[in-house]
Amino acid sequence: MLYVLLCAVSLLQVSRIVVHGHRIDSFQFLFLFLCFVWTFLRALCWFVVDFLVWPMWLATALWILPSVCQISTFSLIVLYYAKLVNRTQWHQRKGFLISCYVVGNTLMVLLTIVISGLTDVESRSAATQEIENGIALLDKMFFVSSGTYFGLLLILAGFYVY
Image (cartoon, rainbow, N blue to C red; front, side):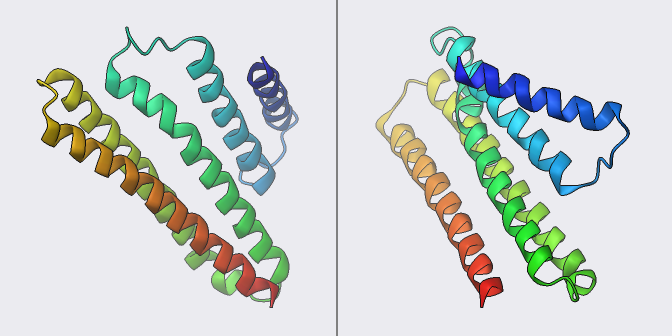
C-alpha cells in the first residue's frame, strides 16, 4: 500500500511541474519521474503481476527494472552533486558526465532485457541444468554489474568531495 501512496505523491509532483510550466529538463523533474516509475513498477509487481500466469520474461523484467530505476536515481544524485561541487567547471564537464549517465543506465536496462529474455528461454525449454546454470550466472552478473556501477558512482562522488 505504501508503494501506491508513494506512486500517487510522485505522480502529483510530476503533474504539478508539467501543469505549472516549470522546466522539464531539470534534475528535479527527472528525479521525480524516476521515483514515479520506480514506485509504479513496484506497485505493479506486488499487486498486479501473477508470476504463474504472466510470461516469465515480463514478470522477471518487472521484478528487476525497479532496481535499475534505483541505480539510475542514485546516479542522477551523483550527477547533481558533481554539478553543485564544480559550478565553475560544470559547463566543460557537462557533456561528458551526462553521456556517462546515459550510457551507464542504458547498459543496465539492456542487461535487464537480456536477462529477462533468457529467463523466458528457460521457461519454454525443458529447463535443463545447463540453461538453469546460465540463467543463474546471468542473474549474478546483473547484480555484480549493478554493484560495480554503484561502486563507480560512489568513487565519483568521493572524487568530488576531495
